[in-house]
Length: 290
Image (cartoon, rainbow, N blue to C red; front, top):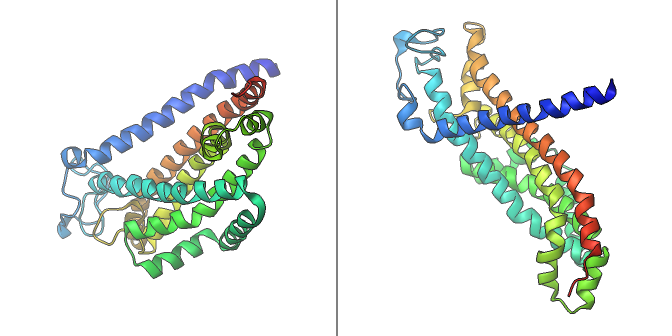
């Protein structure tokens, strides 16, 4: 019975993965094609039709200014996906070199770098992101750069752990004894294996970034109104929750669905990489590096 259940889970897993990928691809495509597929101008107001429920003209209704909710969600996807891309790029650009240096040269320099990361990680993520955003100024780019700066120490520590584990393997020592230049040794032999856990963690951080971005926009620290954003629209809907409680559902469900899809992809990626990691390490250890 247990074997049959495991088999059913293995058969069901690809369907869940493809559904998650399909949803994200459709949302990203909708955001990129927003000027052509959005039914209305996301900034156009019509106070005579404000806070309406779903109709044939407005499939998801209108907000408190009479703006079409569906159009704003489609356009808001541009800020959502673009902001996440900025955040992850900043976190990887800073965190991977930071952790690589700390892991490959752990004495002195590595110790100092890790103490800095410990200090930053000690602060709650959202609180530190709000503080940095307040210092840099509100806006999509500044808020996402702030979140990237907050996530960079976590990427650094994970990268350092991977580099420390890989640098002790036999194939790395063989390459070092063969006279391979250390930067080449690092890039060619160490990082391809050491960064695999980082890739998995990035999927988690991607989902987390969607949530943090929505929270910052909800607090007014993201894209400034009337620019469409999922968090900002969620704030507008929350302000009308007594008069129109269903208004909060479209942006809330959309944001939650995107996060679930990202985590589903991350789970599949983790399972596949974990199964391949031990086999790859055994193969590398069996190869004589020249």
